[in-house]
Structures are given as C-alpha cells and as structure tokens.
Amino acid sequence: MWRFPQGKPLDVLVYISVDDIDKTLEEVVKLGGKVIVPKSKENENAMATIVDPDGNLIGFHQSTKK
Image: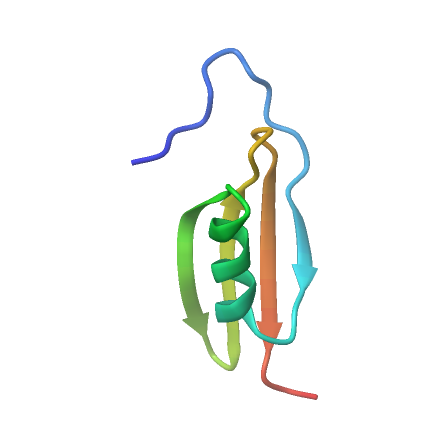
C-alpha cells in the first residue's frame, strides 16, 4: 500500500477533469505513475488519485453529466 512520504509536507491536491478516467489511469501507469486511490464512483461522478514519478499527488475527476 502506498503511504505519504515521511517528512514531505502535504500541499494542495488538484483535481483535473478528464473525459475518460479509465484511459487516463492506464496512461498514468504506462508513464511510470501509480494509482494510489483507485477509481471510485459517487452518484454520476468518478474520481481517482495518482502519484507521478516525482512524488506529486494528482486527482482526476470524470463527470457523466455534460
């Protein structure tokens, strides 16, 4: 299980809106990132959190409402 790095302060977690969260997460892994909070659905939205190869946390959000 991934854990927050010891001694590294937590900053702002930015969520980026994407059209296809599944494809986005596949690309993250392909490019060396890790999915640390898998896709979850709430109402008509999907969200996930990743860590990039430099250790930055990034959230992704997909809404089915257009």
